[in-house]
Amino acid sequence: MVAIAAVEIEYEMNLGYIARIMKNFDINELLLIKPNCDINKAKIYATHGVDILNNAKIVDLEFLKKFDQIIGTTAVRALSRNNIIRDAVSPEEVKVTDNSCIVVGRESTGLTNEELAMCDTVITIDAGRYNTLNISHALAIILYELNKKRYVRDIANNEEIRLLIDYALLLARVSGINEHRIKRIEYSLKRILGRSLPTSKEVRSLIILLRKAILSIERTNNNYAI
Image (cartoon, rainbow, N blue to C red; front, side, top):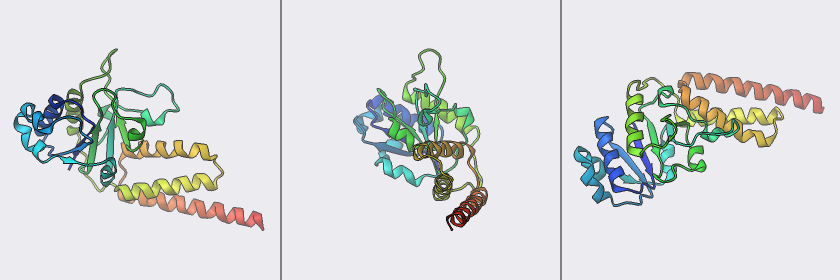
């Protein structure tokens, strides 16, 4: 089931509208991270989504790691090609699974770099010169686009994806890649895998490949050491 997480939401009106939009798209799980507004007052704006606010959970960021896919949102795109954390794509380019969480940020400042770094995919909406939309309006657009192509198949879970990334980083290290590049490789892999949603079978095949490559390099290095 898709969930929505709101980080430090500031206004009751926006929280109420988020619940109402979730109801429109048949999404019931609302997660609130350090909310800065009155949940009860938000019910005035929720219309038929009051039950979503009644059942909303207050959690921390670590709780989001239970999802196989974390989708962050931002209005501030990367200005540099090296800023992989804010390398965002449009909602049309993203596929969503039934164990995904869409994360929206503060009305005033959005999500931080640290919060976006947790995400597998980051999306943005191109809205012209003034690119910042109200978060409830942005969420409506995002859910409309993602709902058109809900993705259902045997996708790899987050443990399998993490294992694949760990092997890739280990391969990078035994290959002699400088350590300062490793973090960029990790973010790049998260973004690629987050957009493509590989199956468990595909991920396991890649893990076998990486493991074999690591063993081959280690044997070669040992032979030279002798």
